[in-house]
Length: 594
Ligand SMILES: Nc1ncnc2c1ncn2[C@@H]1O[C@H](COP(=O)(O)OP(=O)(O)OP(=O)(O)O)[C@@H](O)[C@H]1O
Image (cartoon, rainbow, N blue to C red):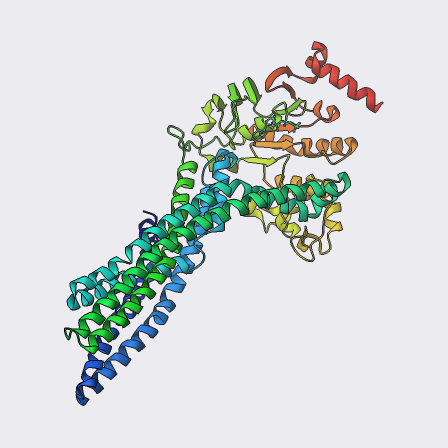
């Protein structure tokens, strides 16, 4: 059951964080709740003693009642001081766990799954809502204890009155059903909520707004956003309406029980079996029970949704967990390549798809060499390098690193030896120093390393263009950040990638697409001379993807991919002599530049 699941989860997490603080919060909170029915009991006796003119006991009971009422009001405030901080720590722990869940697996396959994205979105949106969930656990525990004491007092008065707390059961049951209906509606709309958020982002970000306005798609986008929003509102409204109807039925049953209890005691008092104090006691307790029920219903809703979040975190854990037989490897990758990397009949389909993006690829990347990958758009070039970097595992076949399966290598160790500039690199809106230095966190403050990377990537002009130079902010995330051009962002990305000193594998996926052909050529010329030392000493391999054949021909080996299959492979001269697709495309491009 979700409520119990949430309570168990939050209490055990609270115990792990600060056992003493949690214990103090529980004692204070329960003390406040127990005081409530005891105050009603004292009030009933007080009424009887006052009517019987027993001055001493009346005064004494007045003091006790007042003390209990003060305890009822004050103790929860003191408890709050303890659990508030605890709950904040809990939330921050869970956020950390969420980040670890997303980043824990060696690859990124799990992030490609729409189910993972939906669950992640829902968890991020509802991560326990601050200290509310732990507060709800403590309050509900207090309410349960309060109800037991209230029930015992009522039974002592008349066994029939035991039915009063029982009348509280239907509202609880119906409220649970109502919450389930609501959660189902939320799950059904998760995809539309994601779409809606994406469309709103598109309609409000400068990068997309420009393009959408030029092509006149802004109206269409708005229409789609409205449709998504309508679907969300309709489904959520239906969920809310069904929930409200179920809750009303539960409340109605309780109202009947409440009226019946008061009628019972009034009749008993009229017959002389009950005192006025008993009547005061029952009316006070009955009012308390109705407050308890209303409180319990709200708390149950909070806890049910917290429980659902716990369930979702579990399901994210399961989705991110390594598949059977696919535990992250532990073998330490070689410091220097002796032979190189070999693709052995590698095929790959993206998660959730049966279409092979790479199909039976056999390819050798000899140590110390540069390999250029060419092929039409969608041929599978970027996918191949993502597999090389360990972001995805082949669906079948193996990638061998000096004879050891890449899947058996320690993923973190492997990543530490790889430097990559992906085609879809990220624009980190930090200071320029951080945006570049992030490529090798350990050397973030190393000015010499930074200067070398900037020099290799020919990024000096970008540094000069940013107000404040390396200390200046880039991007619009900061009010005073400098917005860079597409080419400047790419240069920053390249410098970041080149921060890694002597990587064993350097992957450059169209790193200079925003530069003109001559600038790209000059860049690789300079890079090749600096990379040759690493290639010689460590057998370092460079994989380069480019559509420019003037750059591609500089590589030691060229591989042509077509529709995910290896079409041609060899040196520039060999491929030209072969007269296949490479030769044809090379001549075509050379003619265009003549
Ligand atoms: N995350 C993904 N999920 C599903 N399919 C994907 C994903 N990324 C790429 N694909 C598909 O894989 C195929 C190969 O894409 P890839 O990016 O590897 O091609 P490419 O050769 O690098 O193309 P380009 O020259 O345009 O960069 C494409 O059909 C693409 O739609």
